[in-house]
Amino acid sequence: MKQLTRINPGLHPREAPAVSISFYQLPPLPHDEAARETAVEASGMLAARTDPVLGPALSDVACQLRRRLGADASLISAVHRDTQHVLAADGLPLGPYSRRLSFCGHAVATRDELFCVPDLAADDRFAGNPWVNGENGGFRFYAAAQIRDADGQPLGVVCVVDGRPRLGLAPAEADVLRATARRVEAQLDMRDAARRSPAADDVPDTAPPA
Image (spheres, rainbow, N blue to C red):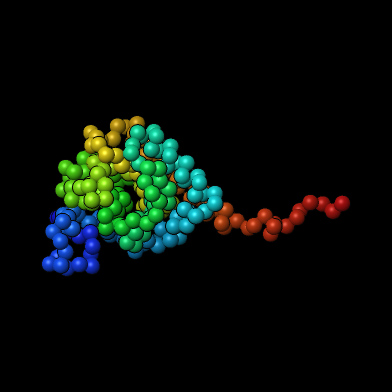
């Protein structure tokens, strides 16, 4: 069901000018949202953007994804509480975005690994979204693959957006999204393993005495 959502949630409808009112569907919450949020926190994903090794690596992944799918922009995001944290992007600024307005909020709530909207403007869930109707942007196409932890919890997504509608995802394009998500998961796992391993200085010297 469509919901009335305003750009400034602090205003009562009678106080807000008519142009600030948009109709679109808020992202649904997964049934196990509390467990999913705990998984996001445990993954260390929220700190990935400022990590001196992982941050640049994710930026390279985002650039490659945008180029391979020929999109206007690509993003790697974690979705946590009320925020979409863009950890790496090509074609859009980094930083936190409202989950209420995010396409990625919908993507993490689905049971399917892939989430695709061929024409955002023709979909009642998104037609009035400020990122579609021109208030924030004019995106028409969105496709994403979930980034999951070892238990299958969706932590966030890799995604592309485009200003032109498409027919959907070709099989090869779907494979690219899935492979990109697996690549991000592997990099998160390596970072987690490095965090848990003892520092090099703490490793005992096992060389025989001279």
